[in-house]
Image (cartoon, rainbow, N blue to C red; front, side, top):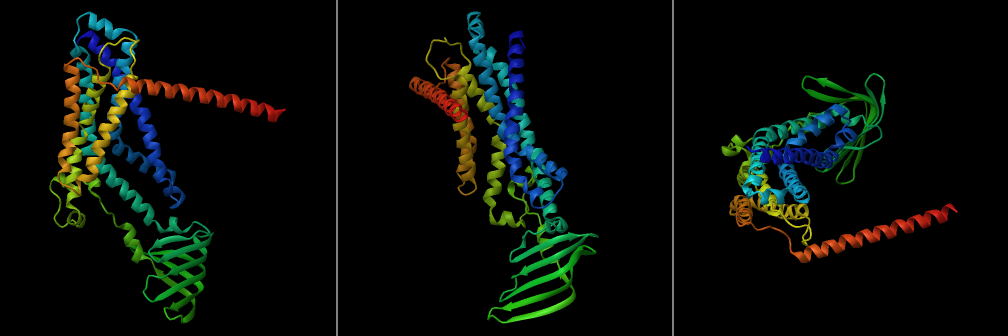
Length: 398
């Protein structure tokens, strides 16, 4: 590799790693917030929460890596053009291949990284994540010790604990059970505790009453000194883990179990997930080619054009949206599977044509004028708002 190619590679790699870290952090934060109920609702420890949060990272890496790459390449080449480095290379007789080779090498590493994560790491992380979530929801003690809060344990079954007493005892236990057709049961006990009998858990209630109301309106009241409420009926449901096609390994998707109930109901979703994994890794290469087609040539600063970074991201977002659209339809309509491969192939071919023909892929100049005007109006409005706010603040202070 030539000196200039190593220089471009070093700058692009540095920008890529920085973009990847920040983009990954932003997307990861939005995904983690959806899992905060593990702590707020189920009373799990912070360690469990962060373990679940860490297992989310492999699922977002294949999506984030291509965008981090397009930002890195477009920004690197745009900065080199601003510093007249691309113009110097062009004047020295260097071809666009000199610029493209380190970028494509970086894209190849990004493709391999995405493929390994998507097919070898993410399925196991998803399975582990589901196991942790199921275990947290099956932890009955942590579920009911939320004082003064109703908990939906199962369909038609609600439980509330008034307070937690010393010695792992519970006070003010209220259970509403309407799972039995034609009858509604209400349990109230002054105290109780969770008793484990082998693999089963029993809610032992002391000094309470059972109100039974039939569908005809008849009401019966039974007072008890001690009553054991079997929890195994819904504990087993909490322990069951349903694995979706996204949670399955690639080897399983290639040869799914014919007795898999999910596969029997939705065989198309397994086919769509498999083909999406085999196509998704290529977007790093596609986005690198788009960035090269947009920002890989030397241009004068006086030309009216949209910022190459904005153009590259806009085109990349459109291409990725087409890929997501095809993936969402592929499980229902079979021919959308071909689009999963066709979209990156067509986008790559168009980008390569622009690169080979020494053309620049860019948005129309009218768009540049509109965006420039929009940015100017936004800046003027923001300045006016700050002046208005300053006057209003000073007036109130007076």
